[in-house]
Length: 64
Image (cartoon, rainbow, N blue to C red; front, side, top):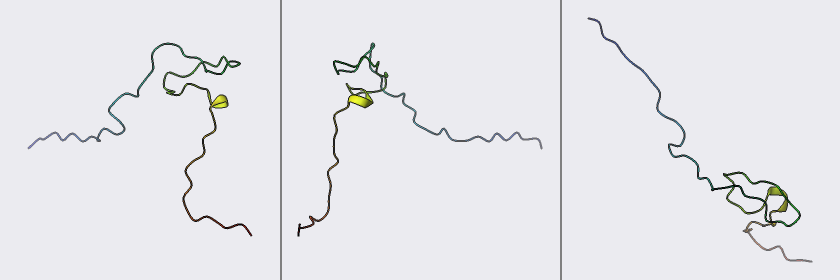
């Protein structure tokens, strides 16, 4: 009795390709000429991205 057994692994990772933007884009800052990646959905480079602070949760500590 000769039987051939094939074993394999499941496909791992995402099946869909990452979203891309069209064309060449440059940072929106007037003094910067950094070319942005096709996969960067933001309009500024890392150095000129406006600062955003996360929403903090928890109790408010009273000042003494």
